[in-house]
Amino acid sequence: MTANPSHLEAVDPVVEGRVRAKQRYRGDTVHRRKVLPLLIHGDAAFAGQGLVAETFNLSQLKGYSTGGTVHIVVNNQIGFTTLPGEARSSRYPTDVAKYVEARFSTSTATTPKRCASCRSGAALRQSFNCDVVIDMLCYRKHGHNEGDEPAFTQPVMYQKIENHPSVRAIYQLRLEHDRVLSLDDSSRLSDEFANRLYDAFKTVKIRLPTADALPDQPFSGVWTGLNQPYVFDPAETGVPEEVLEEVARTLTTVPEGFHLNRKVGRRLPEQLETVRSGGSVDWAFAELLSFGSLLAEGLPVRLSGQDSIRGTFSQRHAAWFDTKNQEIYIPLNNIRDGQARFCVYNSMLSEAAVLGFDYGYSLVEPNMLVLWEAQFGDFANGAQVIIDQFITAALDKWQRGSGIVMLLPHGYEGQGPEHSNAYLERYLTLCAEDNIQVCNLSTPAQYFHVLRRQLKRAFRRPLVIMAPKSMLRHKRAVSPLSDLVSGRFSEMLDDPTPPRRHAPPRAVQRQGLLRPSRRP
Image (tube, rainbow, N blue to C red):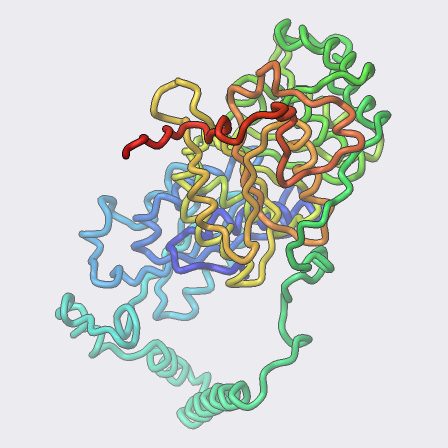
């Protein structure tokens, strides 16, 4: 079961991400039959919420497929006070699933035997790795909830529902007619079940269940020991020179017979020499070195987002593409025998579903560096529900930790009003009780260490990074290799510029502020 906020369908991609991570744990990355995602929807939300369509679009993509999902649509034929004719333009609420050629089944919920189609739907998914959608026709006895009065807006419908016998009464009559049960048997079974419910209700009022009796305890299993409080104590994140050189050699070695783009290959010798001579590394190279050092230690890395393989600003080149045949080569998966796997994917052009998916993945993989990168920082606006309801609040609401990293390109570089601001202040406003980390980094070494730090501490918190744009290639935005070897992440960096000697106090001014006027 996945913790679900009261935001319709927001949990869908989170479930898919969790399932894919669980499949990986079980070594089920080919057929994907050992873990089956099951999503239960309302008819109005299934037709109306865009995240449903986004989640279907993920279903057959290389980096996001889970081998098919079983969707059960509880078709109450009303969305609170809204009738189907006001809720959708399609004939059926499930029509949105047609564009991925999902398999469909319709069931009548008032006939329990017909609901067994859910079992056949699961078998269909297991056999063909496809999405299966079951449209379960039913009704809401009391409207939206038991305190609602649906007759205000649907008087005709609810007059029919009021006179309609209950599902139990219909099935009871059927069993009695078929002589499966007598009237006394059905009454006894009904009374026994009601008594069991009442006894359970009394029990929880008197005695709370023990921790051993509760399934899926927070911070158990692979999460054991990662529930420590947030602390600012430094973590050892430096990497020996020989390991950095090993990673750099991998990042700059072109396989025999591989036709690498000349512009990509032009910088490779320079990068290797930088590491060998103890020179300075830029932002993108520091990132790949951090990934590679984690992989060499057996800690996997997953990077996902729009154009993340090359990088929006052509800075990363995490995978190479053969100029003759489009063959893909990922250098970081060839560091050494026994290393962890580096997974990098270009996502579909979506924010909410993909961030939700990667967040779900991070719930299962605390010892994997899971990163989602926005094409530009303001694109995260489209995923605000995932950020507000899951990433920043899940630890407090559900005791569910996550170490997901959000990379949000940020900075005003004179390129117009769009895609400049990642809204740093928004994430600072969302900080409360050490729930997330927000960093605006200025050196490649800081970036190197903060990524490694995510997996080196006894707790996990989401990390939001204001990723640079112009600094990716700025000649002064470099760090000496020694900072990667012996340094660590610093919450603040002091100004390295020496102060002016004997500068009078009045000569010191705050940048950007006007001097106060000298009025008498």
